[in-house]
Image (cartoon, rainbow, N blue to C red; front, side):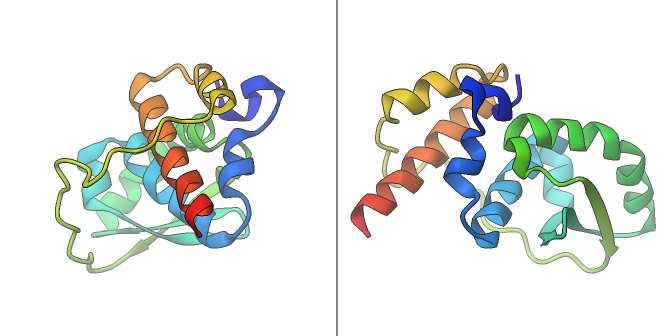
Length: 147
């Protein structure tokens, strides 16, 4: 079930919809979940512009492959990001930035999510997406409390 239907509201929009930077962060985190870890490592989220998610790909071959996968990728992004998901994806060919080092474990555990958020997250069918969503939301909410 898409986040946009969780409890009749759009949880992702409430948590991440306040600024373009937060939407980009959400979609950046959602991208590897939507395309898979390997493809996520070979591509780079550049930003969101007027409903179009801009993705850097290494070459024309990858651009063509991802273009063909676009409907499925957009469906997966809608499942994760609800109404914050893009309407289309634009691909830019070019040299890839050095990927960040893989983080094996978090430096500090995420605080438990508020009860309402946990109940809404229970509607997310994919266990991995649900776990990552709750961890991200809890860290975001904790930062807001300490700011």
